[in-house]
Image (cartoon, rainbow, N blue to C red; front, side, top):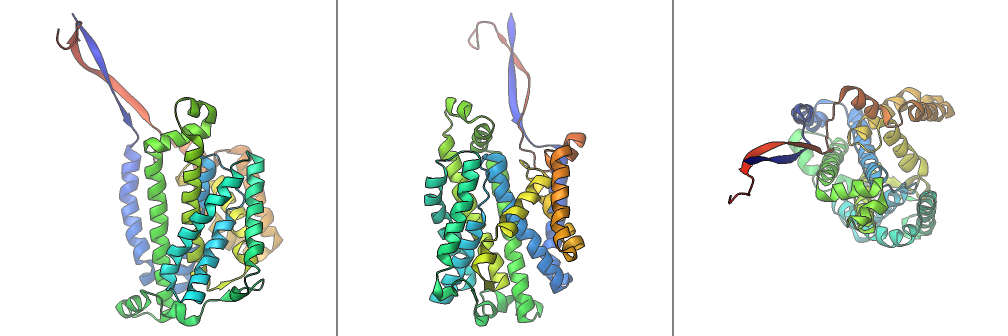
Length: 361
């Protein structure tokens, strides 16, 4: 007599995701070539889309997967930007190197920030992140070497002689300003790809499974051995690092900074939350859909003043009422399509028939 021994495996990949990977390769080739085939204005628009996508993906990782609803992520945008300006103006560091320094310093800032904010939960945590951002903004507004409350500009030669600009200019026959825009665009593209790749890999790992468990039920996750506090802290520091990189890169391209602009809750948090919510929180695809829609709305309604903000608010309310999981969530629920599948499916069946006494009979 023999018994069937079931065999199970965990599957995440789908046929749709494989096709999406092929389409992504073609899209990536076009994205890389964009500065060579489109106008400088379009390159700047693409840069905006990519940097907002990086910010949105990081906020989505915090809120959609770690359950940390922050309304103070502008602290890392602004601090990263000011760290880059300080490194360039005060020490003469190349802006590309200064971007990396800004990311590292933003991660260091996240450690004491987490020490205070993680003592609070829910809406109190959200408010505390905004308070921390305001405190940092007020402190940096006193930094006279960087213009104090009115801000300052990067030295013209700093961006003109930035590492890589001469190579791009000579290789593709561009002017210095166009070469600088192309270089920052390519860095933004690399940062966006690295961010999505990191999040996708994390969510498909054992740590990602633990993170999802913490988000869904922190007490149950602790009961099965998941260190919830450690998981949240690591995600918080990681998103601070990438957000600091993005903030520094944005202000390399802007070349002008002020406390109010760098720490704008509207530009770097409210718009980012809007992007994630309308696209689909808790999905990698959601922020991609959201940032494209946000950019189109901005182009259509930016000349209408306050009506622009009213339209954004109305769209956000309608999406939350009729599609709480966002536009991508609605589309995915109806079609079953997932471009970045992270849900685990248990697939199993009989492996073999073995004697009832076991493998040794």
